Structure formats: structure tokens, C-alpha cells
Image (cartoon, rainbow, N blue to C red; front, side, top):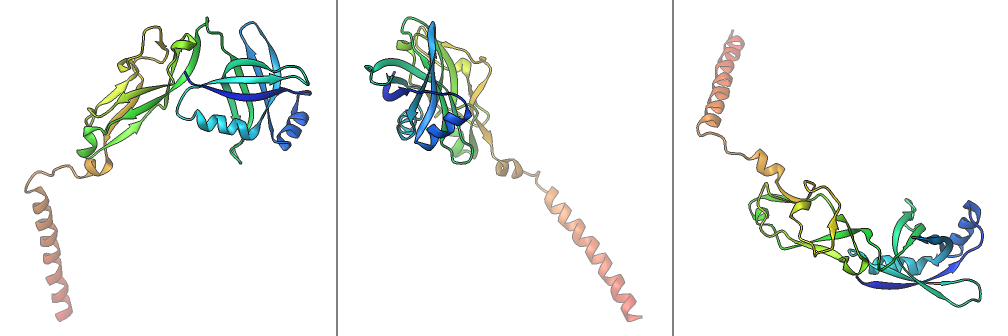
Length: 226
């Protein structure tokens, strides 16, 4: 599992007021907690946190927090981002929770799913639908994958890959239900609308409409001649 370093500082004051002031100063209020660990209120630089999120995009990564309290020596804590709150307007982080990692204890995380190959069903007019972007797994931190790659090149129209089809290393447990679909190739609307019409049916319909129109026009002409 890849590890990214991030600096942090112990913060004073909790609540909406102090949190607003921190954000105005370019920080994000945060909390660090874990198994048998006292919760710690901290702050991280907003720009540095965004860089960390960008580096870890598409993967599950560990975050090595370097926490300082005043002038004391920095303490390093290995963690994973457990919860991230984003402002819906400016799309910037407003609060983040870091959970301490213990290498001897199992950890449950969401692991991103990455697809490789182009489904055979696409060439036949199908459409790829990604139904899940990540799957929930559990295992020792040293065994957890950064991502799970799935080969989808063999999928035809109507085929899908479910959680039960995933292959993971020994010691890793998939926690989502086996019958949950991750990706599927489905018929497109166009292919559904252009199904073959039995020969002769379309032509017969046109003859009937033409015949009706032809029988109506002479009647109108007779009335005008009168």
C-alpha cells in the first residue's frame, strides 16, 4: 500500500466559530482517532490536503501524519482517511477524519475498482455501465491492495461482473454481497429501437395508408365539381 506524508498540528478550540477561522486561514479542521487511541483535534493545510487527495485519486493510500503540538517534537502516526466532508459549493474539504492504522489489526477500507480492456459487446452496439466504483474489503494493512483491476474485454451484451467474480489475495475478505454487480454491458437504446421488423409488415402498413388517402381525395374533388 502506498503511503503519503502530510503535516498536521494540534489545534485549540472546537465548534463552528474556531473552525470557520481555521478555514479562513487556509486550514482544514480534522480529527485523529483509532483503536485504544485518545481522539486528537488537529488541523491540516488545505492545499496540502488537496494535493494528498489528488495523489491518492483512484487508489487507497495510507497517510503518514506528522503531528506537532506547539514547540514539541513531531509525532508520526500512520492513518487512513476515514471520512471527508466537502463543501457542495466550492468543492473544497471542510473537515476530515483520520483513523490510526495498527499493522497487527485488520482494517476495513473501500478499494477502487479499475477496468482494463474494451468489452467485446461494445463493438456489437452495447454500452458499458459502471455500477460500483469501489468495493469494501477487510484485511491486515500490509495485505490491502491499492486498487482492484478487472479485465472486462470478454464481456458481451448482457454480461456482467459481480463481486463474487473478483479474485483477491489470501487474507483479504470482500465484504459486499456476492450478487452485487460491479460492471455490465447492456444494449443501447438505438439497438433496442432498431430491432428487425418481419418482412412484409412495414410495406403492408404503407399500402393501407396510401389506399386510405387515395380513396379520400376523389370524394373531395367530386364535391368541388358540384
